[in-house]
Image (cartoon, rainbow, N blue to C red; front, side, top):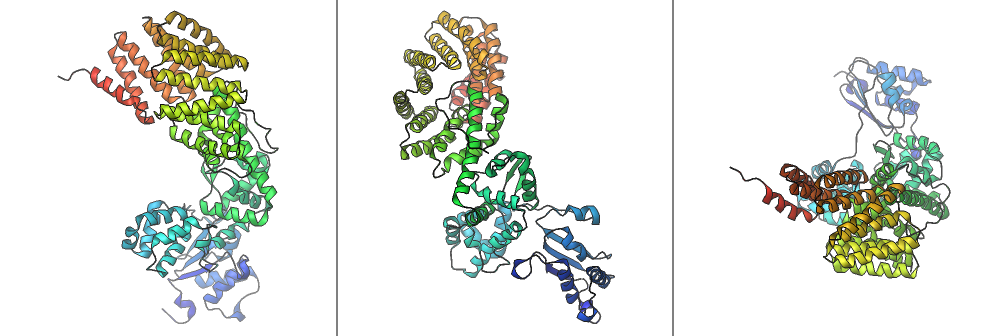
Amino acid sequence: RGEGRAARVEAAQVDVQLPVGEGGTPLTPDRAVRGFLDALGVPASRVPESLDAQAGLYRSLLSGRRVLVVLDNARDADQVRPLLPGAPGCLALVTSRAPLTGLAAAQGARLLALDLLGAEECRELLAARLGAARVAAEAAAVDEIVVRCAGLPLALAVVAARAAAAPARPLAALADELRTAERILDPLDTGDPATAVRTVLHWSYRTLSPQAARLFRFLGLHPGPDADLTSLAALTGAVVGQVRAPVAELTAAHLLSEHVPGRYSCHDLLRAHAVELAAEHDDPPALHAATRRVLDHYLHTAYAADALLTRRRHPMTLAPATPGAQARQPADADEALAWLTAEQPVLISAVECPTPGLAPHTWQLAAMLTTFLERQGNWQALTDVHTVALRTALDHADPAGQAAGHRGLGLARFQLRDPEGARHHFNRALDLFRRLDNHPGQARTCQNLAKMAWAHGAPHEALHHARRSLEHFRLAHDRGGQAVALNDIGWYLAELGELRQALAHCRRALPLVQATGDLSGQAHTWDSLGYIHRHLGRHTEAVECYDRALALFRKTGDRRSEAIGLTYLGDTHETAGAPGLAMEAWQQALDLFDELGLPEADSLRGKIRDRAPAKT
């Protein structure tokens, strides 16, 4: 109501985008205020010279009106303070990649953090712009588009705009373009700088300090999907203390997100932009050195963690870590297990995406994951990493890598009930380790062959392989391995009914594994002693041994062995005349077998059903 341009904006929106002016430079507060005064109809002759006076005039014009002021993509709090109306009845809505905590502290602003869109929200956005029928008709293509756009609303809007402009073009064609583009961001460029995803992402990058900008560019070299501070430090060759400020800067700019405390990630489109920037600003030797540092960080830390879990000499020897790799030394087995659990997705990703020029890292990382993945019962991951590792070692004619890859695949095929495949891989590994005169590798492979022979009802063959394993551990001067081999021999003797000899071997093994701090070896030795005592009719001693074994299996994260131990404990309770305790142990074992997807669940489920008391 009323006359003049200023009156017509009452109860309307005054919308000015703040981040950039001509040429991509940040829009200064005085230019933004002048734009508002122009929008409110103030003649140039009436505009004061100073910013404070201009802001005062701007606020006086809004007094008594109901106006929504939208300040889009603000650089920082100082850029928007002069533009806040301050009059009752007016509201300022500010969007920014920066946290703007200063506005909350000084002006009482209410902060609302917005995350990336979820998958269903992405589909809803596309349906709103393209129609529900078109989206539903190509559900698979839509799913691909959602994944490739990484939950970024602007990326989805660009794809939707391109699809709307070509209604006859299948969405599958757009999805294929997003999947196969040499540069991921190219299909998300509309030709308009204001809406091109690459340009919008670059607005945040250009405000960074040199240290934060370099770290952002190197993010594309990290194997992902997330990283801790130490691995980010390894990327740049800095110490952890020096990388905290750049990480905080990237997080504040929403170029990194701390999705759980101490772990940082960025979506795929940001990673793609980082890769482009690195190719533009950093020379290849610097990028290769950064990649090697971060892979050395993971490799050498995984080596130290694996050594704490196995307490045996590893078949391989690593080259020294690159300076600046920040390799960690876990304090104990608990810390080693926690690190491997947290870094498992990163380590697997590092193996499955080999880096040119760093082929040994591929099979060495896979070898470091072997014990951990086996104890977790993750046979598919074990298969995947060693498939890549073996292929890489074959491509580079690396016999040590081939031996490790064959042994890893043998373990996976054995657990996946493929005895012929397992035997092939174990025999190839044994032959390669023999040619390399690698006694630790031969010892471990003989252990694997023994376990497979026992599982297929050949205890004499198993005992033969176990004794060969002991010989190789002795030649390797590996006391921890010798202790484990003594326990294995005891177990197979027990299977052959030689209980007294079995007991003597396991009792010899126990102090040795305790002396080396091998928690897994202790667990398996207590498990063997429980088995032997049960068959000697010493049920109380057997239960005590099994309880000790189970506590250690839980501590080492060996869930499959825990399930098997619970099954044996239940058998012992049943033999001792305690059916209630037996059912309790069996049910716990069944829950674990089911969770791990192991075939032992079927026979145990039948046993529980058969032993269940009849209902009256």
